[in-house]
Image 1 (cartoon, rainbow, N blue to C red):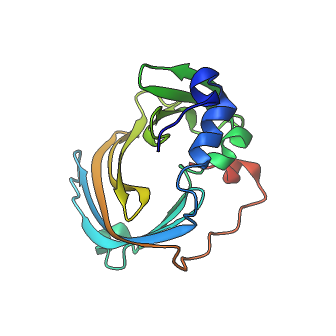
Image 2: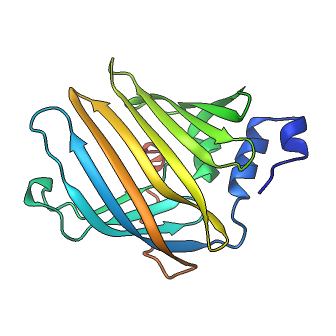
Length: 204
């Protein structure tokens, strides 16, 4: 998909977000095989390697289901996330737009104070793919980054790989995830109801 018109001529926060939301017209949901490799590079040096399923619901809600997690993960088999749900960014953050030669950066400061002081999202100008996320925290030295690789798979531009680096509370870890075998517009798990507390609605 090539981005043109008002986006390039008059870039603004609303235009960037609406273009992100306009990606993949016709894609309501998908499921895919997920392979996750997590390496903790500080003590106790855990290194789980998991296989499972990722479920995606438009416009950016995901559920990761890993049924065979090791006992030291305390039985956590399912993780839900909405970091890519651009439809709620304007509600949750005060946003400014920075422009780079090949990308726009949405700099977001949470409207309700929590652990995160700022989230930056780098958006490719050509594809409108949110390629890179960076979270900065009030606790000095804490940060999380997420880089995403997109590919065309049976007509849709989807995330096929993610790479994360986490530094929080003296713990450092790296994670790589790969996704394949996509099935589109599939009946996926229903997202957890949005909490009434706006602080929780804007978590992650």
